[in-house]
Length: 494
Image (cartoon, rainbow, N blue to C red):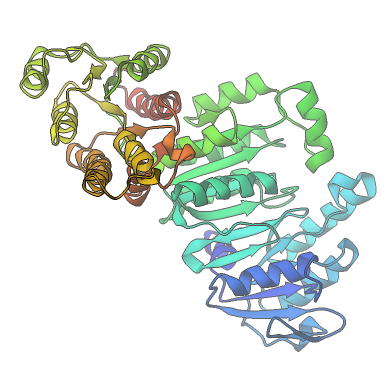
């Protein structure tokens, strides 16, 4: 395949001028209806066509009974919801109209056994012969937010962002996109590759490496047929973009499940892990951690070293965070004397006077922004974890819900508390911007009370508010390991 054809095919997949939904249905429970609905409902600006054997009109789209009745050169992508037995003739007809990419939802291929595997191989060979880039079969769809394209049979449609997803499980794609909706850290491209018969997870990762609007690649993998090729594809991306991977089928039980899910022959977990770490990929233990690590890569600068300072308004949080830092590849930086002296000038003597910087309730109106700025600006500090955001707004919430609000001066103090938490969240983002260092904010209120002005403002700043300090430290640790891999690769001390 030439580079020009490859580029044209990927453009057809992710930024098509028009889309054909083949097998469109009037029944809202059918794939052919849901796919057409999602494409129409989420702002796709290209032309939309639909075909089935009955004709008519669905969701305002005239339905053709034959691909041959559609105009030439108006659609680059076909979204296939027809039975497996119809798909070979369908691809031929689409190719004749200028289609260069196909997403095949149809099941009944490799995952169905011997005859299905043979049919899948014929379909792959045909797509290659026709010059069509084929995703699937047995997949749930694709999303491309730069094109406002939601060609999938599942939900949700995520906010736009810099994370691009490739997955052998459609439900993993949904899970990642649910986190995108929850956190506001959005998605750029997403493909549920299904059986990945032609377009594999490694192909997508490699293309995301070239895609100028992708900032980080995030993938779920069950089985890999060509381990060396997958290694090379990941390795081609990691020198300039992070790749975050979740591996399914790492145990005998998981391997049996993967075989029935996508027909994959799962790779032995330790072999995969060793190869991917060598390639510079970041491995996550599950969907939640994978998205948090990818979101951190997408929104925070890389640390230049391991030296981490914990800034907290309460001692217990600082203690467990110190434990988490100690157990990671990060370093709990002994507080430099000049930084200690500067903080002494802003806090009463009862503060911890070490790292974690526990303010012990001694902070006043401007202390938290000032201390965050001092800590992040110090040349020996590489990263900051900030704890305690949202406390004042939590108090305000209690006052607001009580029977005495808004009398007795409560209205004024509630507004002050909420304003302070917004200021603190804005300060954390601003300090990170000005210092060029990661500043991670963690509070359980991110999930317990997302409307709290503290975590809500973190979200508005385009950054992730971590539900616990341990999860923030895990994400920061992943970033430092990636940064260290770069240093080692460049021949520096790691």
